[in-house]
Image (cartoon, rainbow, N blue to C red; front, side, top):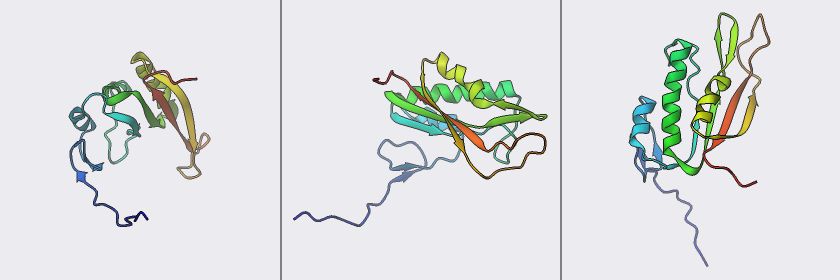
Length: 153
């Protein structure tokens, strides 16, 4: 009869990329962490980058500068993703002077230029959030699911 060990192993947690780490808890610049990761290491990249709306953890940038900054991160995410891997990029909307700009629409051309295939555009709806006064409240975000290679049909 086989015995099952119910005591979980101790997780190896690192503050920098280590291939054998169970968890990497990195507090710092995303590009610095991505630079530590070898090419084609990740099977799946899931991220929800800042939306450039002036939250306490981000500095609001000119929209063109923000997109160029995101392009650097996207290129690195593509570099570290395996050929048969996926990237899920969750974004919301940028709001400026009452005008809404969907970030997924601004960022899609970057992924397309890098040869990624959009597998799905997932709309995540939630019931909480700020109440808008002059438009419907934005209670959704979009997840763009890309693959590097063509999936079998």
